Length: 344
Figure 1: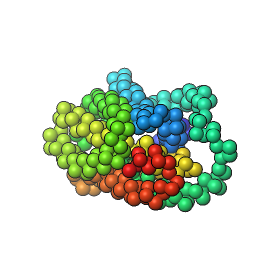
Figure 2: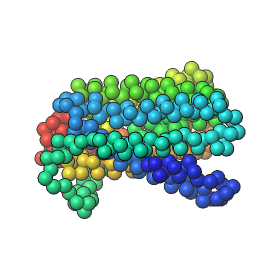
Figure 3: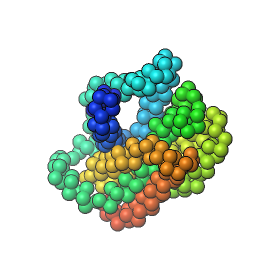
Figure 4: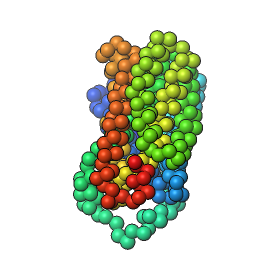
């Protein structure tokens, strides 16, 4: 992931490399997405294995919750850069600074990885599957991985919409200032950080599926109307209201989805199956959400069209949730009673 981020930060501009410049940035973006999915898979499974009984949702929700610290820091960095640098400087080279700063944390991450102990569930295995066995097992469970990918489409599209695309949407579509756009991103990060563990805890109490189904339906019904209303009255207050509502929907769904995905994957492919579903969805859907949203606006001349993209992503999540509900019954012999109970 650091390599993808560094590629985006350091690749020369179009004037120097020509068409190779945007291609390299695209490759860096894809590498970011795949790497993020792989990391999230391992972290989520680790948290689910160290969590006390009945607290998996709360514990695993901090995987996504910790990301919001980065969102908050990025928003503050954006505010700082726009305050210290001229607008032309930000456009020409200042935009690269956040990507470079993001790479500085890599040594710290390696240190954390070295300090973590293996979970009891991992240590109990006398032998671990080979790469060939993992590939075969993932192939045998391809339908489950695909359904999981559909579920991740919802959360990754929502996340990139309310974080990465918000500054662009605020500035270029709603004609707000850089400061206002980054302030909204800051508010979204704080909102996500609050709601994610709350909804993770709630999923421990009432189950995962009720939250997943409820909030995908709410996304389908409300995302376009909310953005349509915002476009009709593009004030800073309305942008904050719209983004905080989308933040609530995202966090409510994600707080239950990540732990659910960790639970429904067969033990032998829990990390690899989760990572594959997450990385594919993030790279192919989430990472391209800003570009797709901008394209839809220009192609249809409808500034609220990103809401349709959000609704499509929510449909994917709803379909994935319903499919997995049926699949669990077919895989019950391979699941523990705890997993089946949480999934149903």
